Image (cartoon, rainbow, N blue to C red; front, side, top):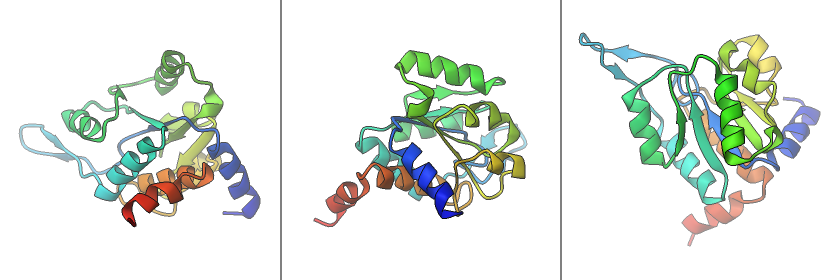
Length: 179
């Protein structure tokens, strides 16, 4: 990514108070595992989970807006302390605007991490648009920051660390582990 583009993303990241994540292709690698009874399974990355916890410890809130509905996501969100979870959402922009109103935030104070065209209405309106390498070109064209790691493979952690570094909170969070 060009230096100018990274400078803009870094500047935008400084204002973030809420990061919203899509699930499939962002928090997971996008694979959907279904058993014969139709039960759904997803694989989440432990590094991503800890990155979310570190980010939350700095005062940045987190949320999920996903098109699919899954008890697995409900459990994962609960385990990570993500209180704002919107599942089975056909219109992600509507859910996003509801969340902004509910939390009293401006678009500039929010980041959104998505990987497909269904995410574009939010990506083009939020303060910091984040995507993953496997996203279609049109999605990456509208992202301020594209992670180097793939969805479900550390991309969420990378995004969390990027925001903490921009807000000068990363060193303080890491210092806790170096005591």
